[in-house]
Image 1 (cartoon, helix red, strand yellow):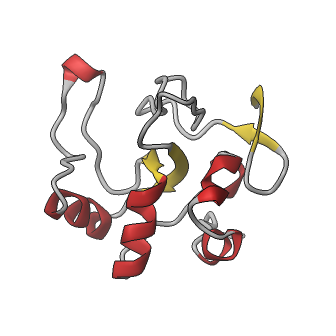
Image 2: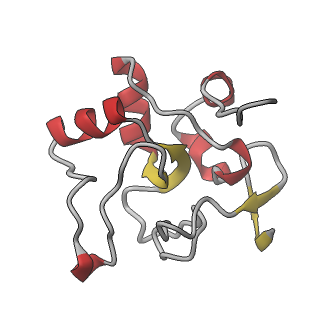
Length: 127
């Protein structure tokens, strides 16, 4: 389902990342961004236990629910719009979670290469 005129890293329409849990800087299910999105939450990833532990070590607890921020807490397998630089940091540490290319905002390419994203593309079982 196309939700906006935003483009993904492949040049196509930006697709939803997740409605459950509801993700995105704007909590609209997509990795939309704007000038005031300082963290640039543009990479749709399927988070892993290794990534969640890495993020916690870096001071960003993505597991504990924070209802006041409309944040449910994540578990491995959830899709979430990650900050581009955090994903890049995880890539350099060898713990980058897989990404859903059609749901990564084209702005991600200002931070990471398309080749790196493609190398970490999530493929559903049976494809």
